[in-house]
Image 1 (tube, one colour):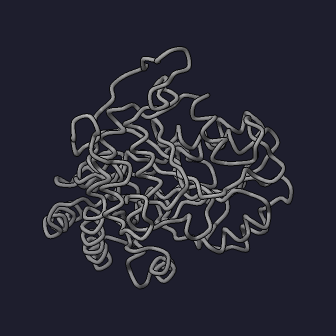
Image 2: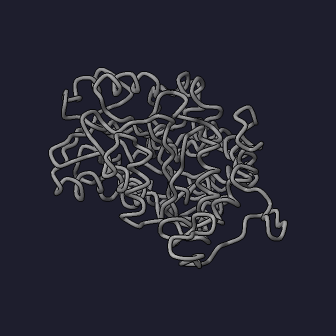
Length: 398
């Protein structure tokens, strides 16, 4: 029943991959905190389980659930979002290949592409993906193998047209990868819009409680490796290649983190509704504040991505960023809040505040991806919106 694609999102998030335990009837999947499994004779695997790097029942339940909520053919869970990204890019790229990515992606993603894969011979071009003409001009026929999109982007909340970019990537024989961390599968499903694979930091909204680190990939049904590339198993199947690399590289999600992510997934739908409502209130407050020079939130009618976000998302998300006119003011505001905790990360039930230029995006300082030094990023949590607004009001006044 749980593989029924007509079921609603919340139903799939609660039930997919999570049937009651056959041995005990436990309604929550057990934590299989185990490294290896007894074989009934050489090669006689019970249920296919052999060694937990290759497969673990708790991780498998999470992977099935993530595939279900994203509408994909298969999910793969990793030890972190960057571990997922690294595994994907090593599967899809070879030395001398080229990728296009947004010019305001997460700093850790850019660091991985520029400083880790760059030394491996991978070339990259950052462009403004809100302008598809820039994407077309950046694609190198025969060399561009991956187009990487964050929408909404981190930290400027830019919105990219997934369907339009998918058409260009497909025409170039390149994979379209969409980092769906900010939206979460509750608000956006890039595979349905033409993406080949979705990336998540499950640390964020999927987990939702700031108590785990994890990452995931979900691949579209029938997705193939970039044109001209065969995987280690000899096929062009992206699913097969990711499965091989997940096992060969080994940066898998542990059983307890997988169980925590499953728990978080069950409440994702209701949490995202509150995140969206609170973020909308906070953004509207900031727009009218004299100390704020700009607000980035796709839920605001005046935002450049508002209409596109309304079409391809089911809500505008819980992330808000704003500018204060000076770096000193931005840093001071970050240190003056009480309910908004000064910390990196996002997507938890508690509200967080940070200075991207000095914190999450410090690795892109001095590059074309450098963020404004007066920018403040908010992860708006589930507290009472009135209390959050009062906290920001006091901080801005100070």
